[in-house]
Length: 94
Image (tube, rainbow, N blue to C red; front, top):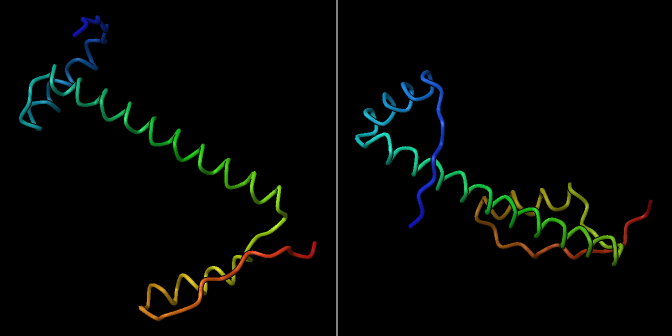
C-alpha cells in the first residue's frame, strides 16, 4: 500500500467531514471510496468508448446499418414481451 498526500482547501475538507459523517464513515474512508468510484467510472467509460469505436468502425467498413425507426420498433416490441425477429443490418441508400 502506498501513501499519497492530497491537499484540500479548508472548505472542501469541512464538506468531506460532514459528508463522511452522514455516510457513517471516516473522512479517510469517504475519500478512498470517492477515488475508487471515480476510477471505476473512468474505466467503464473507457470500455464503453472502445466498444463504440469498434462498432462504428464495423459500420463504416461494411456500410451496413439498421435504420433507427426499425430498431426502435424492434426494441419496443421486445420490451412489450413480443417474440420478434431481430432486424438485419443492410446497406442503406444515401
